Image 1 (cartoon, rainbow, N blue to C red):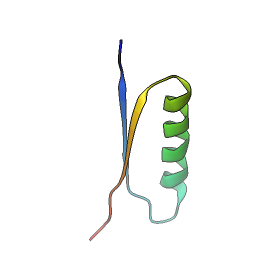
Image 2 (image 1 turned 30 degrees about the vertical axis):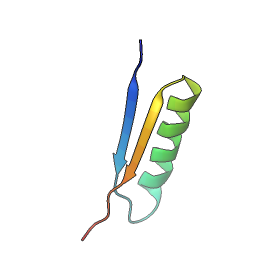
Image 3 (image 1 turned 180 degrees about the vertical axis):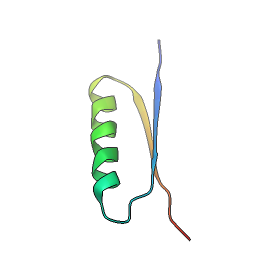
Length: 42
């Protein structure tokens, strides 16, 4: 079964960026197809 992982985040201090990195790494280790998107604040 193919599972896709989407990590969509906003980070002004870097904390959410680090959490997104860990989520992406975890998905990669388990063979998931990953998509990571940083949402910019206007």
